[in-house]
Length: 73
Image 1: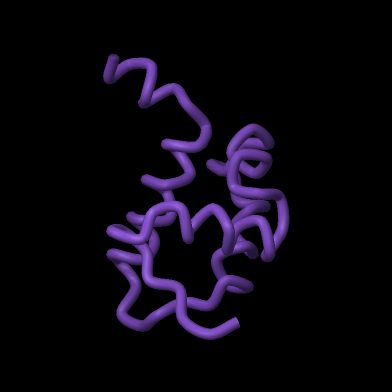
Image 2: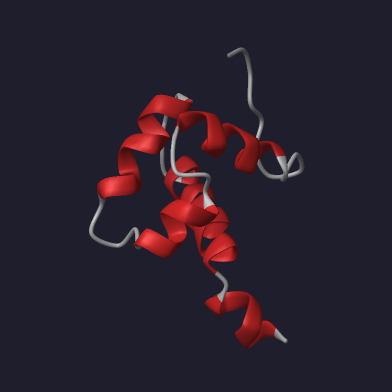
């Protein structure tokens, strides 16, 4: 079961942004997070799972209210 979760692009995205935010000293905007879509370790499958753009990323993050707090627009 765990192996399936670890291979799922959606879970990789969740863990990726959780790590980014944990190591950030300040809150980051959706735009700043979406800017990471072009990073080396961010695969096309992860981008698709994350919604592909800022609006999609916001919807993705809102699916995990226990992990991510989205304020404002």
